[in-house]
Length: 50
Image (cartoon, rainbow, N blue to C red; front, side):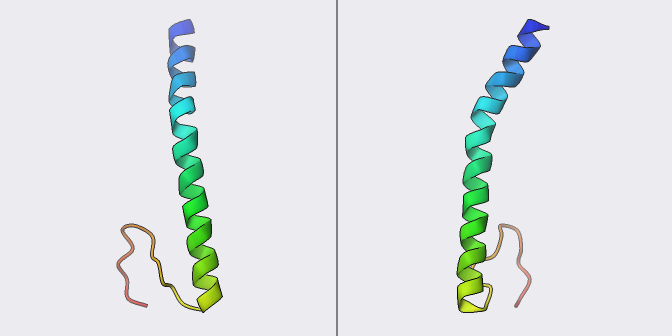
């Protein structure tokens, strides 16, 4: 049980900065797109035409 908890803590320690970076990036894209009134930057994998 202790091994599992340690592994989970290690995973969260690595995963949180990645998630936080993704959130900051998406918020920045939203601010830029809102400022210019168009979708300038798209999310990865979103290839629809606007």
